[in-house]
Image (cartoon, rainbow, N blue to C red; front, side):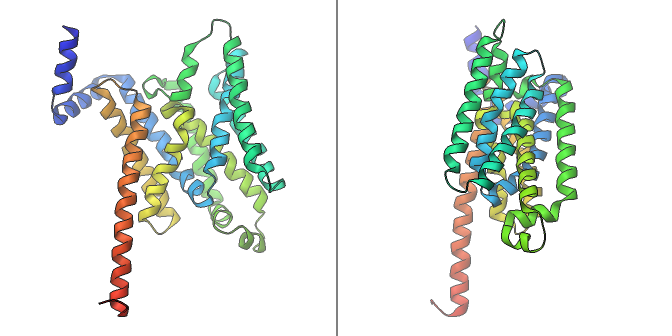
Amino acid sequence: MRIGMTLMRQRRSPVAKMGEFLAAVASQGFLQQALLAGLLASLGCGLIGPFVIIKRIAFLAGGIAHSVLGGMGAAVYFGFDPLLGALLAAVLAALLIGWVRLTWHTGEDTAIGALWAIGMAIGILFISRTPGYTTDLMSFLFGNILLVPARELGFMAVLDLLLLGTVGLFYRQFVAVAFDEEFARLRGVPVALFYLLLLVLVAITVVLMIQVVGLILVIALLTLPAAVAGQWTRSLAAMMLVATLLGAALTSGGLALSYAPDLPAGPVIILLAGAIYLISAVAAGIRARQLARRAALQAGVIR
């Protein structure tokens, strides 16, 4: 009987499935909290993702993200909130990675990769030694947007306000550092300070998105909406706006698509983001060729 009901659910039309999801959202508090968590995470990836793409620091962001597990494992072992441990570990990893990048100039990839692996190893050791080993912590690796409690929504909102305030206050300095460090240095901008501050903001954004897609997939959500936005916009402000809106659409859409077949929401969100990125890349490539051909025709190069 249960198998038959599952098959009937899978055979319903997409419209019927969407109607069922919307009805569930209207009546189920955990789905409302999941949607809100996705929207809060989207604001963070929309604000910081474009800087990661423009500055080409996705690998550094990955090092920060995977180092977070060490802080989370230690926090759980000593009886603290794992998100607090994640935030402290992320900020520490951001400062260490920034210091390595600014100081060494050579071999930084190896150092970042080592920090990445060490952070995860420390986290796994602490988790394994935690009395009454809890598998709930493992959900932070892959995310579980359906289990975000109300108190952590407040924590996410505070992080969003911190990101929004910092980017708004130092927008010009961040833009200068992201696009041209040498020019920014000549203009008197303390490049090292704002570069480290940018990495700290990346760390905060990673923590913001942990519960939505998990540590393993967080870099995809941080970069893919911004990468798509960058293909269709000409200014950083527009890129931020489009990335935020796209992130909101992806998290909400992924949650809706995963509801009827009862799939993990995090991977569905990332698969949807990946599909949108591939479609956008193909469309942008076709558009670029058409514009180049039109310009050549106007210049009389080809007939």
